[in-house]
Image (cartoon, rainbow, N blue to C red; front, side):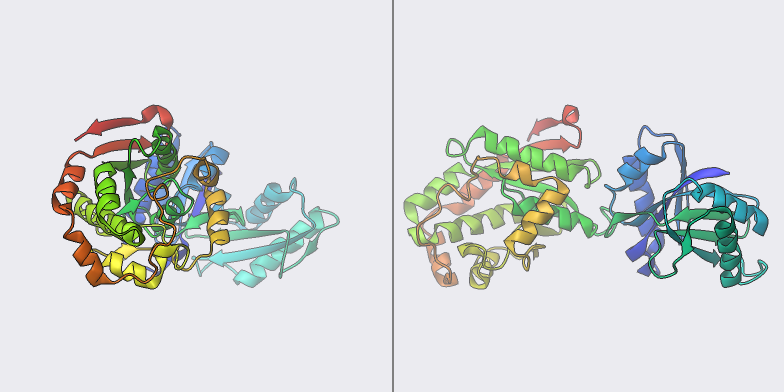
Length: 395
């Protein structure tokens, strides 16, 4: 008998021609997450089996890995006789607390004696005989014991805990997250990672208008995201002060946000090109603020030719807050340190901007030189999911 943690794939099972790529990437991501543990992995198109004595710790770590539908705690036996299966099922569940149960039998070995239903009935009868005051419930049992009869072994486990779902990180390329210190953008980053996109981040700093604690807040948000993103998030810290001050001096107040966002998009697109990222990601939600009306999004988007992903575009604020609490970013996001998007918000920002006016206003400032200077002077922070591994490089 071997103790085993079972990974069920879920959405990955819908892949056909390239499933091996997805499973290999998932296996590599699991290996990275389980560094320091003693374990062995075997996998095929149906299951991934992790043999380890550190079951609880391994299950906890696997809950931070995208691409996993369900995580189960089970046992693998070489003895396949029906009598041994009955005994082993009883030994596994006899000390558990439950009132109702169900036995589900799956046979990859179709030559095994009996049908799946008759085998499940035999096992269930044996359990009823040996554990008093319990009942069978095939609809909503307290526990569902699953018996998989394979060609050379038997796998026995009960229903497990949910995984994160989605796709393994990096299977769908790389994106650049516009990470502010607010509630929305880290949630958007999390959802992008869930779809298999490995992220780097860009943060627009505006000293002395913004506090160093605002940057610290962003680093802490990135550290939360890092545990889902392969253990690290790189943050491209761009000094936005000169651009912001020139916009404030030269552009009509109602267009301040529109023009700042267009410049942020231009900078983000250029950084994408330098890191081989395929899309910009942000936390915009339709109608939440003036720059997030459909018309505003259209005019701001026009500044770049790169796809802009908005995972939260149809979420309301309460849904976003709930998800931020679930992933552990909410308490960081509500720290009282403003980022550059919130410090100079005009009283009446335009909600239906004109793209021709945006083009006209861009001629009032030498934005090309300012954008180039901002990108050239950016700092890259390498944020690990453990604080002691944090370091930064200056380009």
